[in-house]
Amino acid sequence: MTLLDKNLNPVELVASDTAHHLHPFTDHKSLHAEGGTRIITHARGAWLWDASGRKILDGMAGLWCVNIGYGRSELAEAAYRQMLDLPYYNTFFKTATVPSIALADKVASLMPDHINRVFFVNDGSEANDTIVRLVRHYFQLKGQPEKSVFISRRNAYHGSTMASASLGGMAAMHGQGGLPLPGFVHVDQPYWFGEGGDLDPEAFGLKAARAVEDEILRLGPENVAAFIGEPVQGAGGVIIPPDSYWPEINRICRKYGVLLIADEVICGFGRTGKWFGFETYGIEPDIVPMAKGLSSGYLPIGAVAISDEICDFVIENGGEFFHGYTYSGHPAACAVALENIRILEDEKLVEHVADIAPYFHEKLMTLADHPLVGEVRSVGLLGACELVRDKATRARFDPVGRVGLACRDHCFENGLIMRSCGDTMVLSPPFPITRDEVDEMVDLARAAFDSTLEDVKAELA
Image (cartoon, rainbow, N blue to C red; front, side, top):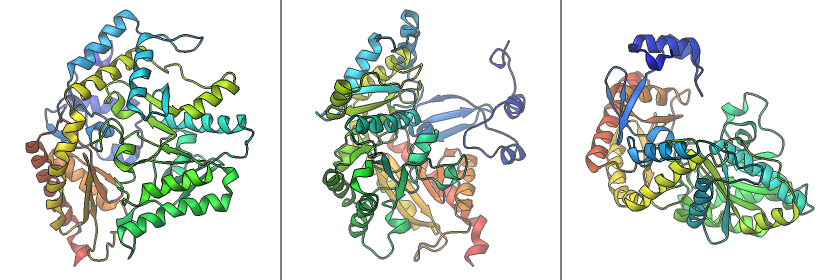
């Protein structure tokens, strides 16, 4: 008998969790001192319920992933049907399954014309780990083994495996485990509010892009394999680049023969109001990692879509590619992803994101007058509010992140999940969210900001 078979109360569940469960990205000592975890039991639409029956508006769609919303029985039924027919088989040993073939075909149909092949993984970290091996293998086959360095951005997040965390530019992650690994470098991010200084956004966007060019020239183009970036940096704080940024990145990568990787793990499958963020920003990718929205988080799955130029060369010249995962192309996960994409298409949910995005932005902008809010920004159903000590100078509270964490806790207390990235409060709600729910979400956020203001009033005097 397991805990699933027992009718335990919340106190017993928290005690068992504390005794046995290690959580990701968690200070367990602090968590235990605060009384342990909250237990989520069920969900519908944009709403969660915890073990005490409390209703919570999920402004983060899980971890940026539950795009179609909670409680869609069609996805459960797709998994059930597939598990009855074939619960599992691998895609090694010259083998495929019908769902893996069908999903590869479907994902390829959503890509630009020059991208027609897909490699399946289980999440975004594995997708970006795969990219590192594939790109270095590609250039080795071309007789350019020295062309192996990846350029990313400071404060970028690309996963938490050793390779994907090295691709990312999170200083706290690099402080643990001897990261980054050799062959990964990081340049300025296109974060106008935090780092733009006195430049106007468009001038700053060009400056941030040219930091990539400067790094290529410093390293030597013959040593640089690829540049990777999210169209909008998610975990970095919903950093929306100036319009000048991505066209310049396109130019630079083409000029120096550097592959361009658009990390669509968060932006993909409709989050920006188009199917992919590279469409929103005119990015010309060679490789597209994806995950989260591929199945709306209902089952773990990710993928890497790869250009014909790279695939054809590797297939023709590479022999066996010694890389893969037990669950690459898992048939039940592929079946769920296919059903998820069908719902996105049939219910026009990507179009709904584009339609509701202006209202989402308008309502978020009503928070700009709050004494703690230095900037509000959004694209599609991604939004951010910067919490500052001084609006005029953009000065932060010390230490950075303390006020954001306090605000996040106030959000939870008020029945809203809103994430803190440092002192940037971010939102990424499920796509079917209604205008009334957007109104409620913003009202709850303002209440949390007011409570946070009370916490820090003495520092503002």
